Image (cartoon, rainbow, N blue to C red; front, side):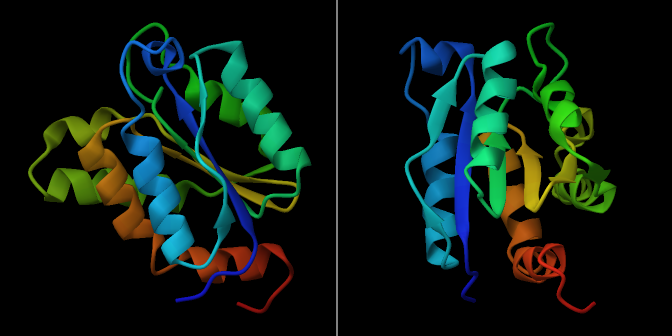
Length: 160
């Protein structure tokens, strides 16, 4: 598969942003997107909260075809990535988020259904929230690989 365009990966983690531990999920996403043919720099690491919205707006305004976030989709009080994403997307694409959760549950991880990640289109950018866990990222990439090229073509006005 060769997907054309640029992508931005945003890791949403207060502890990783503070240097308390390394970003583990962002680099995995970056590597996968590069393998698929997208042009992507290393992951941007931001603290949970307002920094997530700012990073999303910067990525979208840069003209990225795809923005993938990791982290901040759970139930803790600081997990606010879906809310920040909802503020920037124009149209929702719920099937992707639903499929990511379903793959996790089918793999025997019942807590996958607790991820509140969403997906949508902001201008001409597809924005996808993945969980911060390694398993959640793996499930998300499994769901995205066969559809992301087609999704990005449709956003550009390509045929169904």
